[in-house]
Image (cartoon, rainbow, N blue to C red; front, side):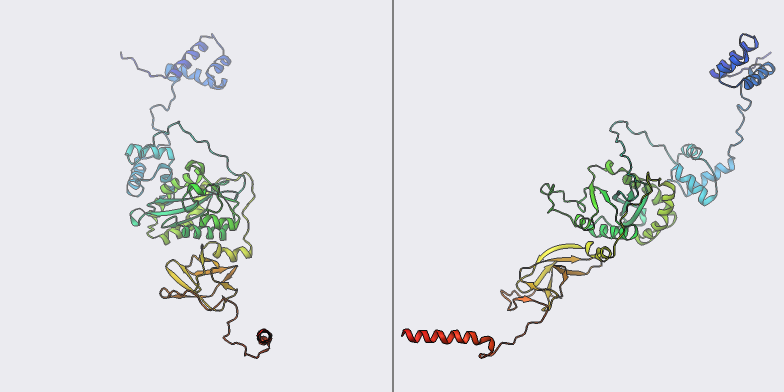
Length: 434
């Protein structure tokens, strides 16, 4: 006669011993319930099962049986086929979202994670080293109080285009993407266009938190705490009264850095599914993508105030001038100005008086136009096709609002009478001396 082999866990073995003491009347039901950590009613059920089935009464009746919520083999095969064909480089979280959105297949993140590891199409990341941990700075209280800004170079369109730069601003209080734009690089003009659009959409934030890239800060040793050394971006922000804060490490502006990594994983794949191939199409895609992304990942600020400052009419009118590249130049003796290998000849009639050697501000606007500013007035000029011949001195003393006339008063004109009198008196005094 063969004996049945019963496998029990240590927990089940302990329960069996307690129930045996209960059956032997060494303890009562209340004591057994306290020892096992269940109710007295459950103790009665377990006791009756042990009386009827012996040791098998302790073991759960569903052990060894397939789960009622187990996925069918057909469903697992369908998920595997979809993941290998379309989402081969997706993570479990994004994979679950896309299976539900595009294929109406419901599966938990953990289930998909185990299956993807089993299929060897995804591997878990190694645990981070516990050393050199950075403690996160508490979030700001209000929306618009601080914007974290960064440019991320990446193959955003994979092999469909070269490396692009995603200019991104993230609100510190909510973690919300406030503006994003693709460009070829992180140049002054690209950053100007980004913030010009941002200000028109959201208004003026109190401060911007960014790194020490050359576009944003002059990193020369002589520029430390010297207000005369200023980038075009610093000058523009100063004119709009938006404070700039420079981060000393990437971890200091960790929210925007982490957002870039998330977008490098998610946005790249979503643009691939949408068959985006150009910068223009990518920027159009962002307008629809960002609101959906924010609805999933943005958090609620500690306070509900929006601290963006509204743009006044005067500021709106000045924005093209503020976000222009501005450089000082001298008015030469022939009333020409040289800028970027081009010569600009000032016209004779000007809105304000212009003298030789005057210092003017040459503004190169985002639309490519050139304007010459003197004391708040834009000067009239023509672009010379080639370098003008050098002139030591030009008869014109200054350029004014009225055209200078060549008319000269006659010899006996009233203006000249005082000079005639002086001349006559001088002749008479000479004759007396003789």
